[in-house]
Length: 70
Ligand SMILES: [Zn+2]
Image (cartoon, rainbow, N blue to C red; front, top):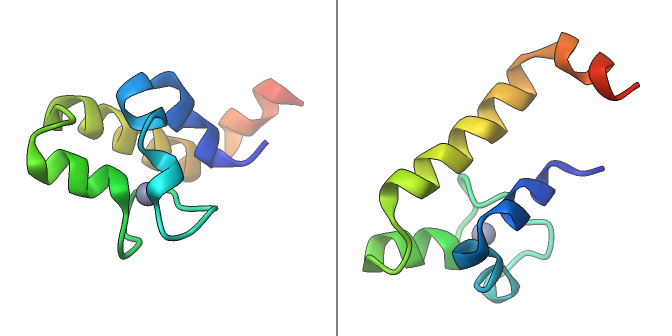
């Protein structure tokens, strides 16, 4: 499963992700990201977004974690 699925755990992000420029947007460093715009506008709590970023970063930095799903 692609990593973008983490956004589905955050309803306020899930509602906006369709507006991202890229369909496979991970909402991290992509330009024209609707999620990041929502955080900047205050529509999405920055703390919630940070939790999401942490999930994404930890997932990509821990190669052993993938074995749990094998
Ligand atoms: Zn995005």
